[in-house]
Length: 80
Length: 251
Image (cartoon, rainbow over all chains, first blue to last red):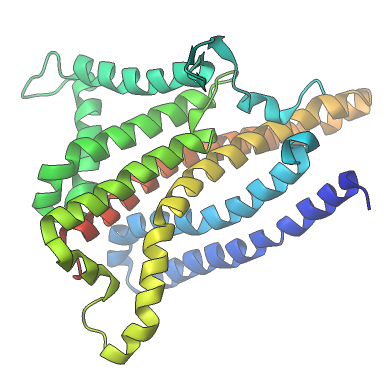
């Protein structure tokens, strides 16, 4: 297998990491919605925690996206 | 390639300099780092120049930036943290926020998209935490590895985890900011690159190119949110880490 095709396979494999981030982010927002429908008066005060948790979780998906994009676009001599 | 998405991260030497074998050239990154320091400083000076009891529009923006960081630091570290670390956290937040926002404009360079810039800021925070932690608590600082309110047999399990998580903090702190900016900027350029590629296919291609064009705008809007959010997350994580240095073993 030559290096050029290996980088495309690697980029595709790296994208599997985003699966976990997708589950995590959906979990955060579903839990927030569930909690805020049960107790709407407390919802507004937890908006900051929501955004913070979202950003921290979403970053992990971004990490794997960064790996995939590096696989795709960084020229090969730079990686050797 | 005409529209290479990696081109935006290229560092160009504007003024080549060399000090005893070390490359200390003045590059395009240096320009934007200086802008990141100059713009908030100039803005804050300008906003507080005509300070009045009833603030004008400019003063209001300056004050709300100040209050935003103040409240963030106060809720996580208390009055003691505000007294000690407010200048550090405010500078970090405004610096990152300005750099991210300036970098969003077309043809501009984003220094936070280079791993070295967030890495240095994260290491600065890490060593501040270690030094202040030992100066304030002495050897009691090691209590952060032994959280209170835990039955002692669990320390066998928890202490190694706490030690690993403490030392991986600067890594995740830096990579979170870098990867968000790097991947975001790359994504915008990749989607924008689809437009001329489709356009090469003729009139039908230009018609289909509306889809990546709309997506580019949507991702760009998301990136504007991310630019603020990552500065906020970096600052609030700094607050949380500094709280550990001040109140070791309380968590």
